[in-house]
Image (cartoon, rainbow, N blue to C red; front, side):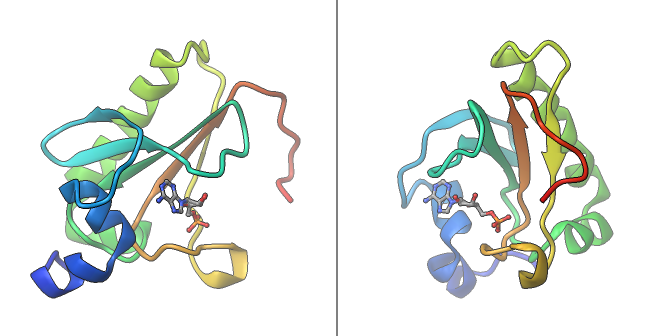
Length: 120
Ligand code: AMP
């Protein structure tokens, strides 16, 4: 689903993208914005979101594959900027069953501490 004014007024991350709500923005481009998670689960925990509204990663990739790729490129730049030296985890939660709580596609960039596998 593409961004619509009505949607933008109700979606938390749309409101961050427009600047209506404050966020600790670390990087932004014409198509994506990266900001620090308000409840960090690791020393680096940044969310990279498309400016366009899409409910999840698959919908974003289907509608705008170039923007989906840009999210990964920006995530790598964020990891570099935080000095993670090539060691970080990228996560998309899709669906409430695995913990998606905000229905605007977002890529978690996590790093700065040891992480186990499989994830919990
Ligand atoms: P998910 O559970 O995968 O949908 O991730 C949503 C993430 O958004 C969680 O890690 C939240 O801590 C984070 N979050 C919620 N509200 C905000 C906010 N206003 N600013 C930054 N991060 C937020």
